[in-house]
Structure formats: C-alpha cells, structure tokens
Amino acid sequence: MNSVLRKTAGIAVAAMLLAGPLLAQDTDGPLETVAVASAELPRIYRLDGVAEAISRSTVSAQTGGRAVEVNFDVDDYVREGDVIVVLEDSEQRAGVRQAEANLEVASVQRQDAEKEYRRIAGVFAKKAVSKADMDKATAARNQAVATEQAAEAALEQARQQLDYTQVRAPYNGIVTERLIEVGEVAQPGRQLMSGLSLDSMRISVDVPQNLVGSIRSQRAAQAKVNGQWIEAEDVTVFPVADPRSDTFEVRLRLPDGVQGVFPGMYVKVGFMSGKQQTLVVPLSAVVLRSEVVGIYVVGENGRVLFRHVRLGSPAGPDYVSVLSGVDAGERIAVDPVAAGIRLKSQRKVQVSDE
Image (cartoon, rainbow, N blue to C red; front, side):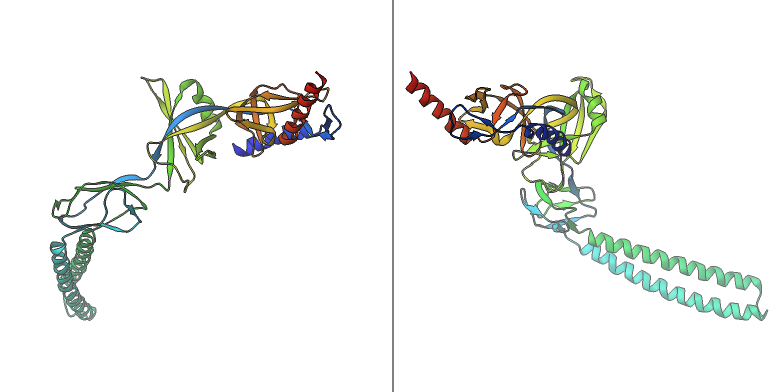
C-alpha cells in the first residue's frame, strides 16, 4: 500500500510543483508557494485490532519422571533448544541399557544365522541337502535379521525416551506460565510450561460485513506500530461471519522482527478499499501550534493568512492529505517560517496604517 500511496501522491505533487513562486504583498522578496492539488488516493478504513502471537503454545511432557530442574520462570526469555525442565532419568537410562543388550544379542544371533545360511547354501548347491533344509536356513536368517531390526528400533525408542527427560524450548520466546515445580511427578501429556514468541506477530480485527468484499479483493492493510504505519505481509479473511456481531474476523500478519507489539495490545489498522479524490499538501508546509494544525495560505493579492486545517492519511513520505480547511487550487507557502515572518510584517504594516 505504501508504494500505491507514493505513486499517486507523486502525481499530485508533480502537478503542484508546476506552479512558480508568488510574491507577497510587500517587496521583501518572493515567497515560494505551491497549489493545493487534488489526487486520487486509496480509500482507507481505520479499525481497531488486537495483537496476537503466531507462535504460542504449551510444552508437555513426553515421558514420565520426577522434575529435578525447572530452569525458567514467568517473563524469562528462552532461546530455541534451551532446556526448560529436566526430569529424573534413571528409568529411561535403564531402558537404554536393556535395549542395547537386546540389540547385541540380536546381532550375534543374526551373524550366526548368516553363517549357517551360507553353509547350507553351499551344500545345497552341491545337492547334498534337501530343499527343506535350505528353506529352514533361509527362514532362520530372515527371522534373525528382523529380530535385529526390531532391537535397533527399540534402542532408538529408548534413546528418544531418555532425550525426552530434557524438555527443550521449541522456539525463541517468553515464558507466560510455569505449570510444574521441582519434585512434582510428570506423566506423558502433563503440561509443563507455556510461552509465546514476539518474533512473529499478527493483528486480529473484527470487520463489518459491508467492508469484507473490498478487503477480500484488495488484500492490502497497514498497522500503526510505534507511531508508524507498517504494511502487513499477509491478509487473511475468515470465510464465516459472527452472527452475534455481523462481523468477519480478519488477520494481518506483521513482518518478522517488528518491535513494540505485545499480545493483547490494541493496534490501529487501516484497510485499503477502493480509491477517492482528496487534497494533498507537502508535510513541510504544515505548522503545529500547540493543539492547532494549520497552513499559511497566500491570496491572489499576496497577503498571507494562517488557516486551520484537518489532516488525513499520509500520502507518501513527504506529503499528507487534507480533509478540510483549504480548497483545490489555493496557494500555500512552502516555507512556513518565511510565511510566518511575512504575516507578522503584514500585521505591523496594518497597525501603522491605522
């Protein structure tokens, strides 16, 4: 959406800059002005949304054991792969030793079966034994191979159970809830710790159904974070409405790494819905006086007036739309400082004339 704003604002600004300088009433030199231009800009609807963490989960135990270490607490920052909970592992280590012994026995049996199979095969080739003996040796070898493979799988499973005694963080994030204490016994499925990642955030917005059609077709939105409008990377419109509020849920995915957004925060969101004609002026021409926003307007006779205006949405990096206070074609001072000095000079002249 930013690129669209820059492009359309650029057209308007080009038209504004075609005008040359205009002299004020006195002869102190030219006061550079531009004309208020009318441009076609995207129509933006402002709504409030709620920030959510995309990665938010609760880590559970995948094996049984007594908790011997709980390494993090609420509000602690955890990196991906950090051990957050350690379970007592004597039972799992015993399981690994037993599985290793079973695999060793199975390997010896498979080697013996292989030797016997090769011996029978050699004799069978000389037709010194029956086919039944050959089939029996083949079956014994195949069974020994299968037994060894099963022992290897059992060992891998036992090692995995041992690894489960060290519960690790699935991603970088912050702990939001600690659900186990040292000494408590965890069974498979027991919840241990909850957390969320601030690296990837999204905004959930309830949108009136009369706007859903245009939002679904445009798929363009922005969120205001730390005073700046950030373009959403993706816009997802839910296919069903909430019958109680007649609204559709829309989710905006923010770029990864955006700072200053936390789950539960209210965030201003802007959806692009079509286009509209609006007036555009340079940001440099806007003056802030306490709570008053104004622009110096230069009349046809060169007199300078300070005009209160109501601003709208940004129109690119250097321009802003104006909702009220000026009309298209009116000339405004580019340099508000020089215009302010000229206005004071006018007042002095007026007082002296009186």
